[in-house]
Image 1 (cartoon, rainbow, N blue to C red):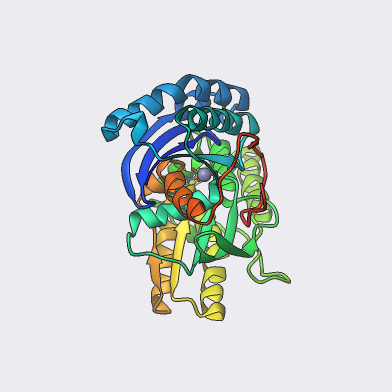
Image 2 (cartoon, helix red, strand yellow):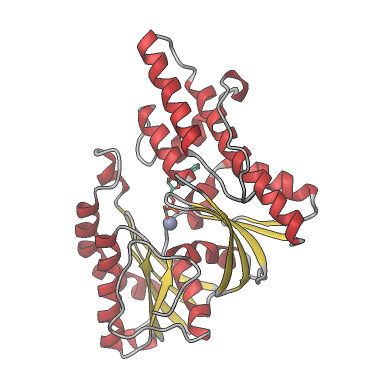
Length: 338
Ligand code: KG4
Ligand code: ZN
């Protein structure tokens, strides 16, 4: 089954064609990152307008790359939530029109389910059940993936997402948007013991997380240094910040592995590209004898292929939409009747 998959929830316009959930025939992405960089973050209206300009051409390009005709597309999938609402609406409207024109099923996909599915593309043998640490620009969660479309949230951030904090700290340090990748690179040259930053202690739900205290402490440290004219050791500050994020995430993943007895853990989302977090998860899960699944960097960030993969499994359980499908800025990953 060839699924044409559309992703437009943030600042990447992406159209992919994925066969049977696992084989990527093409994965076309038009990134707007350079455009938003001059504003220090995504400007929602600009994002929507750029999606509208790019999406039709990208779909034609995807067909050409895959060597397929329109008749050979069996379904159209689209990220329908969550994301910047104007941006998601562009993808949803395009996908509805395409599904209607081709007279093929329309499959709505939750963006975070898509991030998890990036692992199915990277690991052809991976099947649920497994645990998944989702760390993106907007979400930070530990999820029990019981089946392809049956999930349970074990823990979630109570305030900011990890990626949001990377971007905010990166911005204040003068790094280009989005700050995560630049901060990761700088941290690799630093000494994490030079600065002490707080790590949130487990609360009532030991899997829940919090990053706002860490973010505020880091920003205060930077502003204080500016005020007193102290020169910061930026690589070391980046290393201490990244270590604190990892120390928030990894022990909770370890605990989840121990308490659930799962022997498989995947990571997903843009922040899953972070070298320190990847290293720490590999090491900690390895000690427990658990298998670790980490998509290659290009599948960690937003892309259409991950949506095409998850869409296949949504289709198999009948999760298809009609022409009344709407877009949502927020929606639970657990899904509900459309
Ligand atoms: O999953 P994603 O592409 O978009 C959302 O669904 O939010 O995640 C984007 C986030 C941004 O916050 C970006 O700074 C972060 O992923 N990111 C990283 C790294 N690469 C991307 N954060 C830390 N280290 C990285 N290497
Ligand atoms: Zn994403």
